[in-house]
Amino acid sequence: MTTEYEIHDHDVLIIGAGGAGLRAALGALSQGAKVGVVCKSLLGKAHTVMAEGGIAAAMANVDPADDWRTHFRDTMRGGKLLNNWRMAQIHAHEAPDRVRELEQWGALFDRTPDGQILQRAFGGHTFRRLCHVGDRTGLEMIRTLQDRGVQLGIDVYMECTITRLLKDGDRVAGAFGYWREQGRFALFRAKSIVIATGGIGKAWKITSNSWEYTGDGMALAYDAGAELMDMEFVQFHPTGMVWPPGVQGILVTEAVRGEGGVLRNKLGKRFMEQYDPKKMELSTRDVVARAIYTEVREGRGTEHAGAYLDISQKPADYVKKKLPSMYHQFKELADVDITKGPMEVGPTCHYMMGGIRVDAETAKSSVRGLFAAGEAAAGLHGANRLGGNSLSDLLVFGHRAGLAAAEHAKAVRATPIDSAQVAEAAREILAPFERKAGESPYTIHRDLQETMQSLVGIFRDQADLIRALEDLEKLKDRAEHVSVEGSRLFNPAWHLTQDLRSMLTVSEAVTRSALARQESRGAHSRIDYPGLDAVWGTKNSVVVRKGDTMTLHQSPVPEMPSDLRQLVAEEK
Picture (cartoon, rainbow, N blue to C red):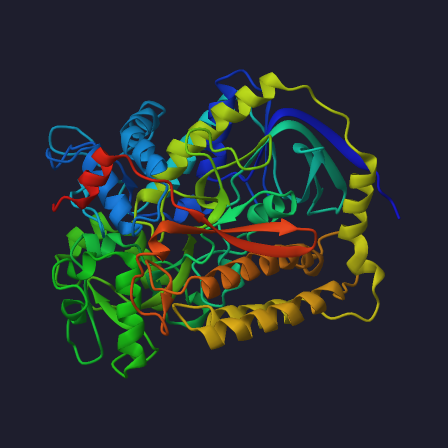
């Protein structure tokens, strides 16, 4: 068995090349660090691009009454007060500066008549707060960050999968992985590592997430001893495409509702008035997703088990100008002209509020030298994320993670890598080739998605969650015996065996945390515990590895200072 590998040295290694990873890279570069960015797909092929609606930042360009306090309050209320208040405060304070920085680096925003960045309404936000570029905001952000990173000289390692973090005692010392194309091994030595690998959606059958989103970063951190937090809170975006089957789950931006789109059931009734008469379609995502799900379950769903989202009452030119991507997406993929008729939409597994537990100021995890930002980190969004907060999250905390990782790298010496850890990591990667009679990873992945979709979906109960844990145990056992054929060149089945390990880890963490939380809060809905419970409102679920066992405990939610508590309690 060959364990030859190439070696790359960096002060700061960033795993993941979406918005959070690129912003962290720019932060670390600004401190003079030697930075490497490794991603299992292509540079910029990230879900940042799918964040179409805008960047939430209280710039007060359209609504002069907006400020950081209102943004903070909206974020805390949206997260049902389970958020790390300090992260929410930093985020609300710093988001406008990070947006202005993007503008200075060349991002082109839609403009108000007097030339300021235009802002639009979005679910859960008191004021028009989302800075946008039509409905292509994430794409413009990635373009801007990427251009700047390339200009400043980051080293990028594309199509390289990291399978293990290497440690020296209690701190990280590097990462081990392989090039997807040839299967050659690569070793990255680093003093600091930032995880920015995004979410976990591919563990569910219907998801807006693409093939990369298998929870790798969370699983890598968990295996290295880091804590995962709030893993029960998985956001189902209310509006994904439901037809035709080939596009099921693809996102329909909340901007459609922000620009005046209305939701109707098959009877033509605008049903949001019975779920949230005040905010209607601009209610928070958890409320809208459950409303559509309930309409379908009670027999008022559309032909393909969804709801109608209609913006055809607006002038066609307005729709094409404000929502160009949506117009083309439906025309090309579903042969529907959204200026003339409704879209058929339904909930799709979209975003992870939980993730690696980090410190608010520095984005550092519970493992020395390991940082996390963006969707892979937990804390800011609490039990439910507001639309637009993900883009400002990755700018604010990507920046902070990069700075802190560079500071940490300056303070420590590079250490030699333990060859035994490397040999074990290589053995683990190659094991599926050694087994001749095992099962295909594709059947295990299909069964995992069925389990998570049907038992750990929008609505949950004790019996389903216990059954899901039993299923996951069997799936873990089957995954231990998975086998792949052929060589290490261009072998997608082999790549999936690596992803399966990550997905099984995060799926178990989600299910255990969901079973423990005996209440409904934000994106976590228990049929058997339908109400909010004040006691559970003071606890975050924390998952950590002890030996080979996943253990779960509750940790008190950090207590808010009285002035901020008063702010959140005030009526708008």
